[in-house]
Structure formats: C-alpha cells, structure tokens
Image 1 (cartoon, rainbow, N blue to C red):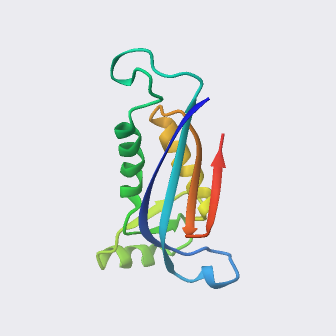
Image 2 (tube, rainbow, N blue to C red):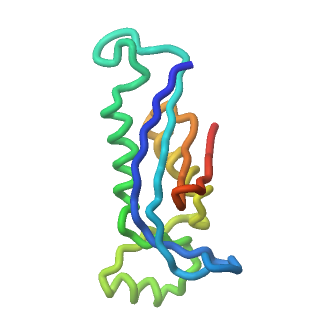
Length: 139
C-alpha cells in the first residue's frame, strides 16, 4: 500500500449546543487538518507515473477546503435563532452553517467526504482542536 499525507490549518470560532462545560460558549481554534490518501499501486504513465498522486493536486484539494472555513463562525444549523443569524450577518460576520454539531469528529468526517467527492483515495483525516488533541475519521 502506498500513501501520502498533507496538512493544512484554519482559524474559526464555534460553540457546542447542548454541551455542559466550557465549550458551550463561543470560542475559537486554530484547527489543524491532516489528510492521508492510499492506493495499492502507483500511476503507470504520464505526470503521475510512479506516484500515488501529484502532491500539488493533493495539497490544493485540502487547502481549498480549509480556506472555505477559515476565519468563519462554524454554526450547527438550528442552534441559533434566525434573528441572531441575521444580526451577525448584518454586522458583517461570516457564518458557515453546517448540518452537524461542530465537533472535531464531525469536521474530520466532513473533510473526508469532501475529498472523496473530489475523487481522491482518502483513507484518513485527523482534525486537531489543540496541538495535543485530535479526532480521526477513516474509511
């Protein structure tokens, strides 16, 4: 099995609804995302001969996704009143509405799924909330 790994990071704020502890309050992270791809064989011809994938393509895919979340407020749909969302947007804040609780575990799955949709043979994604704590999603 051959594999590649790349990483990217982004800054964003979030809170955890229905959580009882410090994370129920609005706070931010410098999220670190590490993605892995794997395949049984290397490319046979062209630019990707003897490669899993061109690193440039792999890096661009992950960095494009982290750029979508960078410096936004990650909000689980339905956790803020509509007037609160309108007010925040009216003040110029950028919100990223997501259909799941904004945990590191769910973000790892989100990155995994988006990269898979791009046709990448992604095998695992790690999302670090802090330098020492991460969640993993793998196939």
